[in-house]
Image 1 (cartoon, rainbow, N blue to C red):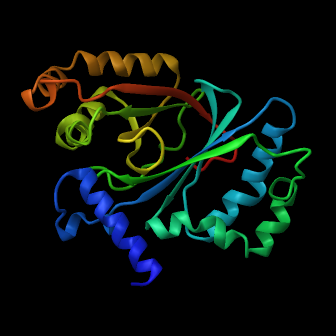
Image 2: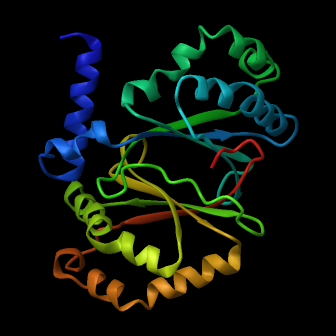
Length: 263
């Protein structure tokens, strides 16, 4: 078996395991986006400006040339270990996403623009470390939906990760979204950007999703409507989801878009 075929088949099996069922042809991973979610851990000083220039002038344009778009670029405003930047890179296949850096290494236009960051000396590193996860879009939300243009005020994003105590509990939590939680979010006024099941990354099993709001007041109002919605009460008290805890830890981050962000 060729390496490419092995990679594709292995990820398809992982995706099937994550959803807990054999997917019909209309719901195979090929119809759902893959995402790389990167976190750049930075130190105060020149690193944030260097990273932002790298995203703006080199990385995002080059990723777009590879067909990876729209790319989200965000500053962590509320959460541990700041300063940090996040990148959300969508693509039509796992191979397209995870081989992007290898292809960029042969892109002379990218290398020229990226040189201050890409080839920074060890005495002045451009970042502290980079963490990366590979995610597969949920069956019920197969494509990233960018926020509508013209949002007023300071746009605010909420990046939430739900860890589960077991694979079975994780499958049930994903199922909750596919069986009604999306609709409750929409009715409550949330801007929903993407939902992803983590295939490769830390703290597995987990899922991650991204919401967008006009400001903090909008965020608080949406969550208040969500918590008091009778549909949420029914779903959350369904015996399939409530007989034990299916989420063991929630990470909740507040992000703001960098000027170069396409989301």
